[in-house]
Length: 296
Image 1: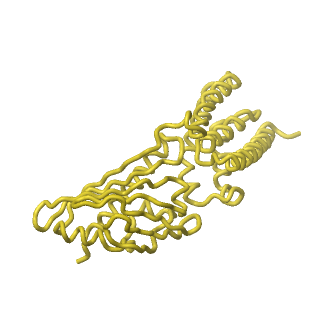
Image 2: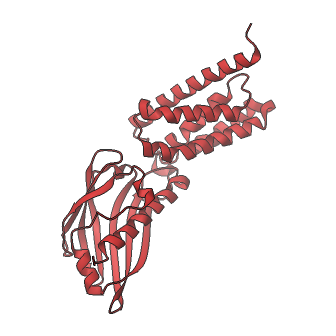
Image 3: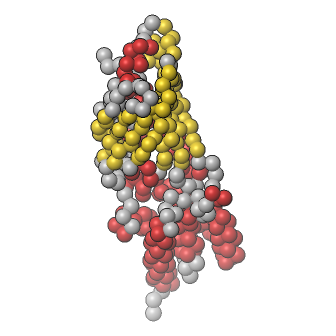
């Protein structure tokens, strides 16, 4: 006759298999319903896995079993669900946070497991709806501004800005984490209607172009608007506009302000908003360094 330890391990394995299988089905449903960028995926799936595993009989440590199930699910997601490296890296922290909250809560109240599990379920249900409709969404419009003083006259800086975008500069470490990278660009000029097209490749997703057009042009100010974006980046955010303002500090220095406006397309906001704003802030710094600073 098998001992308690063996029986417990068997039930834990069964619970993990069922939880991961359920998560795979849930993922496919969210993709079919075009909800893969919402909290239905990023909170709903880890909450469902955690609660299912917590119901396994004779689980010695609920938190440990939940973390094991989440780890297995994340490791095989690239194979079963087709997710790429960066998606798994970005999703892992929020998955573990949800799992730990559920696990520790249940471990601390094992004598009231059923009640506690139900309460947690009801707590995570509304959180899982964020982004599924306009009613369940926070503001998505974002704006990030970076200011720098470049070692160039105002005329030199404007001339650099009028050239075809430079994309050969070294990207910040965060933007090199399997995100698509700018590999080539075309288009020049600062007259209304002039175009810029930046080709993104590498990282995840198919190569694609971001196309911007000059919408406003006046001394000391230029505004580009996004016409289209078929790169993988459009899966995470939607570019609205890119605005550059500059004024001379002295004969050899110019103050540049570069603002990027975009729409956040990932939920929950409390998790993805800081990450997207950080990435866009790095992008604005890169643009000033490589496209508003003349080559010497």
